[in-house]
Amino acid sequence: MRIRPALRAELPLLQDIERAAGEPFRALGMRSVADDDPPSLGLLEACRRDGRCWVAADGGTDLPVGYLIAERVDGAAHIEQVSVAPAAARRGVGRALIGRAAAWAEEHGMTALTLTTFAEVPWNAPYYARLGFRTLAADELGEGLRSIREQEAEHGLNRWPRVCMRGELPFRPAP
Image: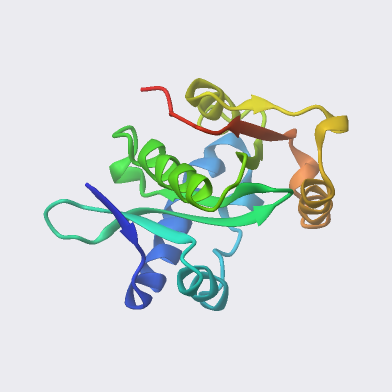
């Protein structure tokens, strides 16, 4: 596996990865999450062009098996989306992508990584906690994270418990 910037021609593949990664939510009764549209090609292209979209490429085919997009929020690198194809799950792909985002954040003088996620989904908040992220209290949220949570609520994601999490830099994901 190799972590590298996404190529423009790969962006539809990233949407396919997102759809496939959403399917396990269906078994948890989270059908609307499973059916949610992936990020648009326009958004993915903007992230790619800005150097904030990375893929985990298969060592043999060099095709993406996972991806991560990030943005700057409240002085931190906010992980907007990280998705791994189910066939590549449990191989350290997500951890490697998060490590790349951490390197990008450090290169750009940011202080931490942040993300929002489902509190009770095993491959969400519990996974990030194992990597070293901590759940933020409401009074620790900056304006940007509060805005993201409001948008998520408008999108219906508050039907299930959600949290904001933070990993301080330098960030070294636990194995």
